[in-house]
Image (cartoon, rainbow, N blue to C red; front, side, top):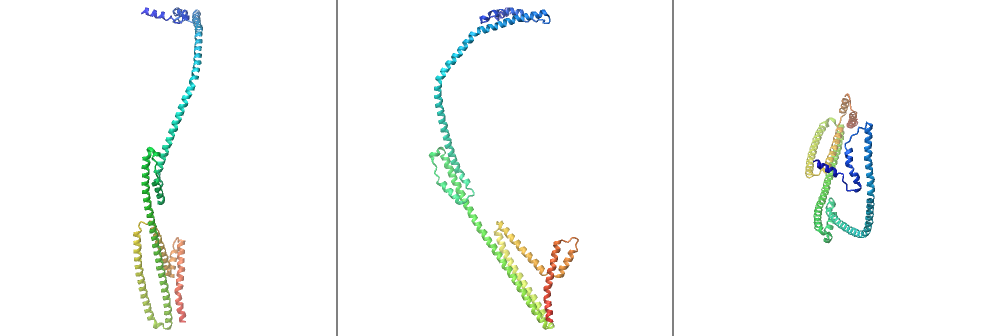
Length: 386
């Protein structure tokens, strides 16, 4: 084992560089003298020995570096010549290669451009076909809600459309299917719109018919109101005439005519009762007839909400007119004492309402006017007796 270690140590001093042989051979002695040596540098003599050892090793190291630079210089010059010659030859090769490379790349670029142009042209052609097909598919959606005449015109144009199989190529069947589907859809839209137009026309006719019925009913009511007013005026005139005749007869023979006047008054009352009964019966029959007509109309027009609203407005106006008439009748029959008592009772309240007080005062004015009108026949009688 020791022999193997000695051979290894001896072999470590060998070198393939002949110029380094002397230095490499001295390594064994240097290792023996300096390897692992520890100097006590705090002692001057030991410090001196350490510096001497360092100087020896440094001298050998710097000498070796000088030798390395010296023996490497010719090799470096050859490497420089090798690199320069390779650069010169490479430049000549490139000068020969580049024209051929330019020709090849130019052709490759031209071929790539042609390929891209062909690809772009094909893409644009396919895109145009897809747009044309999509335009056909979009026709039905654009016609929703349009008048039937526009839908019919578009349907005629679709039916006249002729697809070019050579132009469409592989998309010809797709375009044909799209055109067929669009025609079918537009035909359906046309039928639906025509039905809607017909229904709109029928609705307009029903509206016109309902309006005519409403006008007719309003006219009938107006005639009834005028007839009632004329009848009331005539009755008032006849009553006034009768009152004047009775007053004249009473002036001639009050005692003898009293019984006859009482009989006449009785007859008049019965006649008025009969007239009122006949009028009430006529009004009842008329109301039943009107109600029957209105009921039939309501049943037929249940779906006509807007017209029912109009009917409701008309009915409200009739009620307002009836309320106004009832108020007029109340004021016409209002007595002075009744109006005065109502005013006094209301004013006795703790917080009377101003509007109500004004209404009661107005009632007193009307009652005074009624009392003055009722007093006229009495003054006429006194004047006749005089």
